[in-house]
Length: 529
Image 1 (cartoon, helix red, strand yellow):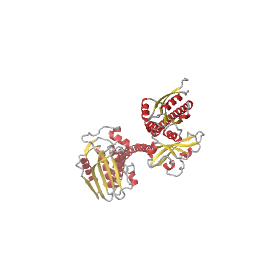
Image 2 (tube, rainbow, N blue to C red):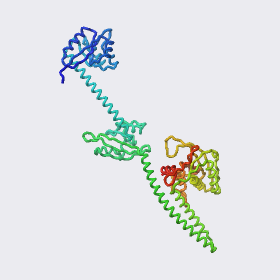
Image 3 (cartoon, one colour):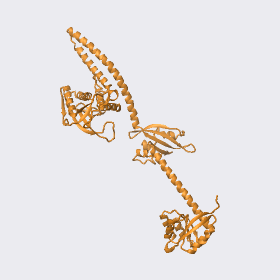
Image 4 (cartoon, rainbow, N blue to C red):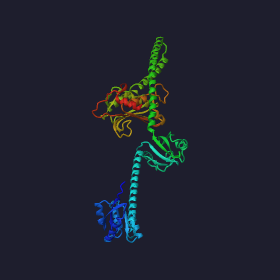
């Protein structure tokens, strides 16, 4: 280590030349510092020197030229952004002057007649040490603030909701995801059970109860809580102090609503797939049996007629078997691909064909009306035509069955703009052809309406029902559309079939997907299942 004294460059603000000479003489008496002094007598000279030269320290007299004083100069130095440490020097030793200078930013003060080289050196050392400590404190605070900001950024980057609580289960810190999950609540300072469960005390089974029961820090419990129709998965991690006691807990909450829905949907898909496999096998074998039975019944009828005996019972049995065979065909259709050759057809063509076929199947007492307002619209749709017409006729057949005492069946066609099925809040809109089939029948209760498209669900006790609407929805979905049902007991039912319209000049989509379906059909099948 060098024994050379530390060079300290000092700016002396003093209006008395003799006092400036005395100051320099006392500065030469210092042994630990070599003080190099530049002297000025007013504020303007002070600011000019500071702009030209770096100084380690400033000594300021209170009374200066032109009626200025050291307080005004020190304020100007600070206003200009200089962090130059300052020592006040006074001739009177007035405590009032010393206090004013210290308030303005001076670190120490000396009385002119009362200090020598040793006192000066101690004051310089003290002020420079205070400056060093202040600089280190400021740097430490800046580093701490930077670390806290980085920690908060990391904390807020966690997508799960995180809340840190003390022993009283009061939230002391929460990340951005937690704040956004409760936008209308004051998170910090709130009780967790009040916020999440809406209770005054932690409910039975609350995982934080176990966390405060003296278990190890590695203990974690995961439970599901329902909040605002959301399902939350909560993991709890105890926070242990140095003595091993639990001082708080961290709750990490994840919204698993969509995940649970997806899992439930997957289970339904598997159940539906198994049902279809079973139904396909049953339909195949049952169809073979009905074919054989119909053949034998034909032989019996021929024998009875040959001997002049009545065959009414055989005819009734044949009708029942034929209806059973129809059920087998529905089962077989339901388990088969819904695609087929795609064709381009207009709303007018679809309406014409549908009106003709419905007209042929109407029983007495049913008044059929078709709104032809939109028939002239050249809206085109790409569909597997026969499968779609069968689906629409199935809906009409169900509407007719809902009016056993007669009623009114109405067919309406229109065009409307909708978000495509399965795109939720994407914001994308497309034009759809809307085919509305309305009846004035018995209507449906909400629980029946919720299940009306489920396979094998029926409110009728007749043979051959329970699959027609499920198959109709499947066919419509395979063509990129959807079916909506609106019903009320005693006020009838309206089924609205929505089909995407083809852009002008577009070619029909004839690409094939799995099992011979079109690509659109395969995609829709996966979504529906």
